[in-house]
Image 1: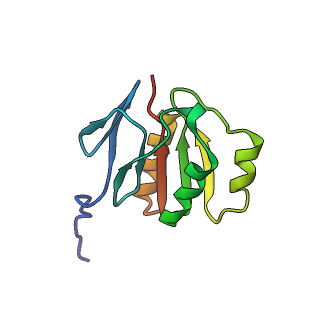
Image 2 (image 1 turned 45 degrees about the vertical axis):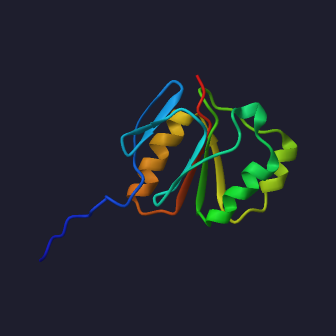
Length: 123
């Protein structure tokens, strides 16, 4: 039997988080961001009240299986209008506080799932 090391050098790993920040690959971000195993990008909404339908629909362009929405320091759910916009999406949307989204992303990424975390970073 032959063993090889599973290199995670090319992966975007959430390695820490706290009030008002998220660290990906040892770089601290203090603004909303999108994280997939292959990339990190800024995300438009500055906070939960700034979230609009296009912000949620645009996440489907990455073709993930699961979309984790980190809603900041506490778990929040969008209004019925926003939820109806994503009801028939191919990906599953999960709303949780940002700390939970960081932990869940790490687990799903380790399982080699097509996961996307869109996180609102607030205090």
